[in-house]
Length: 218
Image (tube, rainbow, N blue to C red):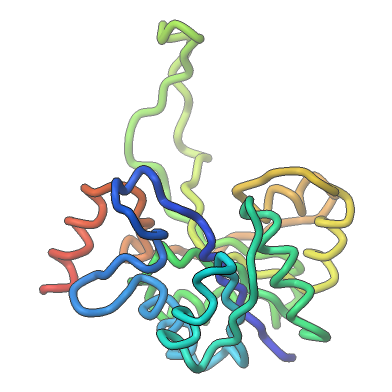
């Protein structure tokens, strides 16, 4: 089954505090986008990568990731994924991966694809929640302590049969979402989990970037 990975990379990453789109931020000597795309190909299970970027960054992205197909993304993440789906053609399996997870181990990507090939229609890599979790009101007052035993933190790439992801997006026209699996859930689909990996951390803040830099140096 053909596997196409979609990498939304049109976000500005304002919480990182830099003047370039987050995917183009350099981690050591290579951009987050380059590392994310290379990791997908290194898994050996991805046939094609489609990267969605702002219109003024298309040429720059093509120079950075010549093995990937680069298309124009949208104002919101869901718009970019829609553009990627349109470019994915008749792919049977689709991964959606954050460019901001540049250290994702190839073995984790393989686990996601293996679960799809075993019959799942939607797969997400997850990690147990280590911190105590509190539910609070609008003023910050604690309402309850949440049992973390059945909570999981979700990573990417998230994997789908192309049919299940297209159905989910068709059922939510114009809807904004940061989690594609959530759209599948709302459309009535079943989402299963595989083991994630701490190295698949998402770089969102300047602190995250410093942590990633230290790990890369090691």
